[in-house]
Length: 297
Ligand code: NAP
Image (cartoon, rainbow, N blue to C red; front, side):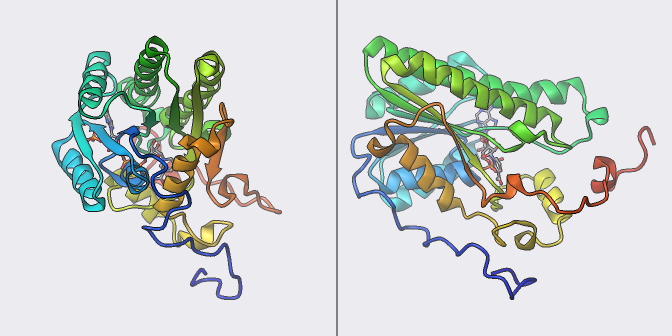
């Protein structure tokens, strides 16, 4: 219940972290790779797979993130390997899959969670900023999916890919031109790969979080959030999402119970992206929302 709207119940809070929707052992013997699994939502997704018996591979660049991911999975008591990997680099991704396979056997699930994002008005966005976000979020997702797909095609084994998207993929994302374009590509790629690789037993889905604040959010993203006065009352659910809600959805999509779901984009956002007002609120430019002066000043 939102403190600002005690008269309305909103969508109830979910069960606490630690509960599981699937039966224990659903992922026994399955290796799950989570890119960017040492922070925020990736770490929460990895934890839910770990609780259900998976062996976890955390893949990202920074030592402190790899350590945080490893500790989170160790605390659950699941096998874990943290591998330094830059998803933009095909050789680095191949080496990560080699290390994962050597430790746990061929990964059966890939969660393409790693991404980059920061708010900036389009007119101020440098070509380098544009390229960097596209390179990590879209190209990195493709490179990881390609490596996973090729290995399964060669081995003749099934697998499941869960790409993490964002709702601004189809609404546009004022202040996030690079990231929203990249995520549109991720949703589209999901649909292509699901058809191309379905005959080989590989499911490809996209999972889209709504607003799920967490302590690892970058200062840039946190700054945007801080400009929103109360997060709960700005959502139709009258609350933000909790990380385990995304983790439960990811484990379902990749589980035996979700086998016939492929090429799908599942949104876990309490209907926030569909929100429209009965009356049009005044337009506020991205510059004004970010507290920036006039262009060029
Ligand atoms: P986050 O905390 O900023 O995590 C991003 C992760 O990606 C980090 O662990 C980072 O690790 C990794 N990463 C970045 N560049 C990489 C590279 N080149 N190679 C390998 N790993 C790289 O993000 P988050 O908030 O948890 O979001 C997770 C996913 O959900 C993202 O796809 C995001 O777009 C999506 N999403 C989040 C929200 C939200 O409310 N949080 C809403 C909509 C969508 P290193 O720095 O160690 O490489």
